[in-house]
Each structure stands twice: as structure tokens, then as C-alpha cells.
Image (cartoon, rainbow, N blue to C red; front, side, top):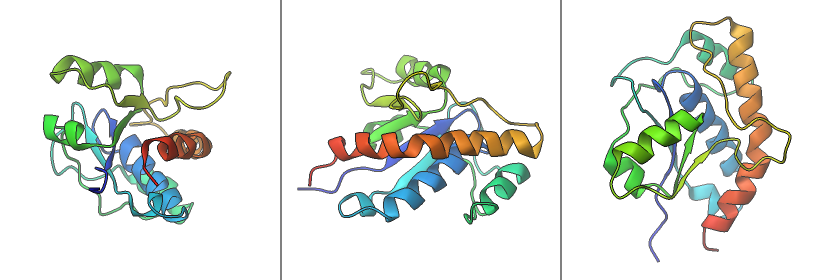
Length: 160
């Protein structure tokens, strides 16, 4: 059996939320048994450019939890990235809708990063771009909070 494709995390510009979420999820997966440990997590934008540096506040927020994303460079999402992904995780419903509208046939493996949390947890992670560090830290903490339920869902998608 071939290895599953990567987990693709998307946001608007791939310079704030998705690089943070990808790093946090990759870190969590490394602590899991195989085959989860070997999954790769990548990120991309639905509306950004290519090669842009990650926001300084995203770097700082992640350094505070021991992860370095300073070398990240943005990339735009492509049909191929989506089609090859084990699953795609957006930050907001608008990200999901943008991909569903742009890609034929409509992908059925697009979810929200916080979609698997029990109610009353909010499902979307707001964009901290241009805001103070506390806003980035809040977005990071919302991602961290979602990881246990997300790992449980990923386990159902990966053959043992």
C-alpha cells in the first residue's frame, strides 16, 4: 500500500495561520505511533502569493511554544496539492468554499481545523494579520485546543 499524501493546511495568504497550524500539527503527529508519525503536513494559501515570508508575530507566537517557523515561505494552493492531500484543513468556511468552487470535481476531503471539536467550540480561526501579538497567540491557542480531536479524526483516515 502506498503512503498517504500530505495533510494540507490552508488559509488566506499562508503567512499567519496555516504555517502555525501546520507546524503545531506536525509536532503533534511526531509524538504519535506509526503510521501517523510519518505523515507530512504542508500549508498553502487560497489568495496569497508565492515566496512571502511568514509574519513576525506568527514566528514569535510559535517560538513561545518551542517551534520555529521562521524559514517558512508561502505557496499558493493548486489543484494538485488538494487532490494529492490525505485531507485539507481550512481555517474558515470561506477557505473551504473557495476550494470547493475552484476545483473540479468538488473535493470531499476538505474540513476545518476545528471542525471535530465538540460543541460549543467555535469552528473557525480568525485571521490575526496586522493585529497585536496577543491575537496571534490566541489563534495559536485555538489551534492547539483543536489538535486532540483532529488527531482522532486523522486516525480514522489512515490505515494501520
